[in-house]
Length: 342
Image (tube, rainbow, N blue to C red; front, side, top):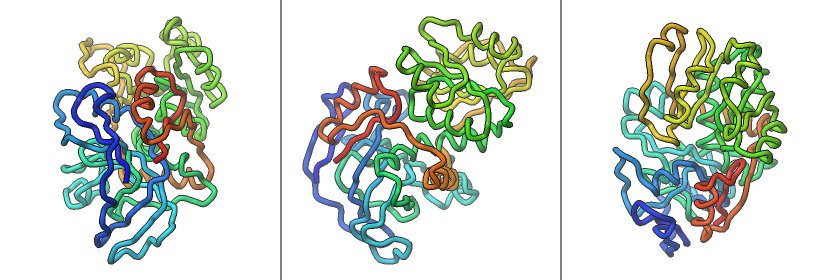
């Protein structure tokens, strides 16, 4: 089978197309022919590298995987050949206190596919049955491959961390990312008003079509001023931020008294310096969120299979075009998910 392996941190030149043996079936596993694998910002971080994380090179990137079961191993009863499936994007120990409590994304030995263990930039993958989930015949593999990381992350933030009311106003940084789009869709399902950001007129128009009530061009408009005008200087009930150091202070400023600021990423950096007085005087809850549990994944799949949410596909690349797909994401040209098709 064809695979793309990453040989060390650095440029896209470190992504190499190779031929490898198809994995052999084993008990409690299924062999899946991958039909689609979507990119996440984590793919870029893994390639570029960031402090504190040692990557087991050479590694196959790709966390979001959908395909068809080619073969089932011994003891597998829930699945059969030709089932259409999507994978929970991590391997967990299933034995630590967090896994036993159903909090799989807190697992002591969490290994996200394509980050600390081989992922989906290939034609076949051998997967343990506890991370395999069925998708309905009327949903495409491309849509399904857009769900695992972004959908699970968004569902956990909205329904496990934020719990917004229909009357709430939410601010989502970055309308064009896969997670940003999913957050907007979920918040609008609840009935919230949503403010978001984008960097050009084309993306702003697409964000309005998603259902945003206000989209701010973060490159040329003042975020605080626009939010104050929209909320009559009260601020928003909820801020959801994956940007990090560049937006941290603004996130605290635009949050209303008693509101919540939820962080789930640090794209612009993870180091901040700020006065703690405004947050505690306003009694703001600062909350962290990371991926989600298998039950969170199952819940977002219910919405997906029930046609309640629809991922936005930006572009599709061939497997061997993975370097070009990386460049598109790095340059911020996308609106929605970028996919690879083996």
